Length: 153
Length: 264
Length: 116
Image: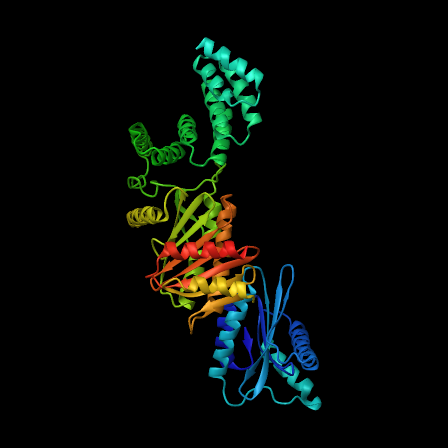
């Protein structure tokens, strides 16, 4: 497990252990990675974060257009693996959680412990959080710095 | 007897679907006409494949003929159809005894005794075979120190399985209804259940878990945790009320703890 | 949720000592419908009941016995009842220890019959 913010580690570790998800990723709504568990390549993290943030943004827009209001989690249940993607509110910003789970757990377990992780994160969060606006001129530097921190290189 | 056999043969010829084949084959068996008995019983069992008594009769005739394998197969079929068939448990106990599998023999006799508690011959047979099992473990001169003797009746009063949290069998055994030993598979399947139960009761604020009772068709199970590292699964037919199964499990837990202490 | 499901669950919670009655998706562990006293964590009960039922299904499969019809997890501070509730569903009840086990069991089986 790697985290840019040390206070994120414990709640995420508990979530992974209790829900038995295989892969977990926490990111800002702009796709900046905050912490990850289970990814082995930085490319996978970048792709997952970008796609996750994109899906949440487009689903939110779809919900707004159709008058469906806010939405909670998006779950894709595949044959062997499932994907759980959910936005959540942190103090002054929005984050997104993504988890990949297998048949050794269930959506109910993932959802249950995800909710508890969010509660823990909100409780332990410092006042200033990652989630600031991403500027085009600093995007690449931010991304590379995040990946170095998350993968130790 | 001969007249009876003739009358029953006629009745069966007139109505091949008649259940008189059971009495006819039994009469032939008693008379020593084993081949004829086998033919009649075999046809009857073929016509009524779900009739446990037909397979039981077939097994007894095959046992009389000295065909242990045939008898074993037939009694195993009986237990698949009727898990609490007294005759099949007695028969399989006898076959296991003859082949030297004393542990399996005791298990079937124990089950038979549960089904027929008034049958004192079963209790004495169990006692006798247990004595043989103990004497078998007596050391030859110069042999290493043997394992401590088994506590009497520990975890063998009823079909039960003691295993650790890693899914390794410690004591006892469980068979599928077709007679195949499933002890290792059950231990492996249930190894993580204790942790799940512990998590569930913790998250639901229900305290420490003590027992899991499961109803599954004609069979009831009770899962206990004699110690933090072990699990005990007790299995009984549905005719045993849940409250009594809980008492049986209580007793099995005590015995398992005693056995584990003696091992320590 | 239909009125029928709600009525069925309400009938279970009328049994003395029952804290919550939940209809759960067996595969997902998600709440389909619920009837609970205030403050009861039905989401957790649903997830864990489904999880335990899945784990214990391995036992009945291994021993070639029929699927579980009723399961009761007993603990020092209460009990979790799970009954097969029809196509892909479980009926779950969380109770105290002072409850009449036989009555809750029958209420769940009756509810399962009405939902089928």
